[in-house]
Image 1 (cartoon, rainbow, N blue to C red):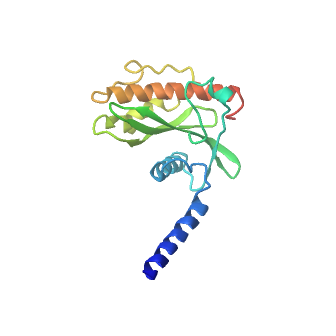
Image 2 (tube, helix red, strand yellow):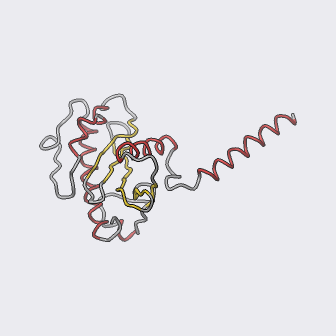
Image 3 (cartoon, rainbow, N blue to C red):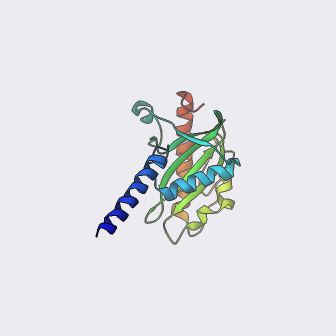
Length: 186
């Protein structure tokens, strides 16, 4: 009985130490799986081994002017040794019966460097995660036309998710422009 209590105490101490060590990051309110996928996307896209994700705080007044709701778990400045590398927006969009998590990675000039579906929770519609389809958004900026089925290819079997992703990216671009005008993403 005493042995079991020591084990519980040891496990508790290790978990507490881990929370202290890892718990105070910019991405502490998102799941560990999503954190890992976000970090991997930033690392491979910008070809960085080390970098920092700094949350960008958006006031409620500015948030009210954006097309999407923004909070400190969604919008990050990507830096390396105090040098701006780009920005990351972590969002969710609806699929047929659930939601999926995605990231839009921006160059410092707010053009899209890459978009990526991080977690897709359904059996159908996974085609939106293909880089072949997602590369249509690379280089886009606010004001560029993004119309599903017109200048953004339609996907048979993933219509809802593909439309949803197209709308989400359009709204992210619009919101980033508002943030740029307010001096929050520079």
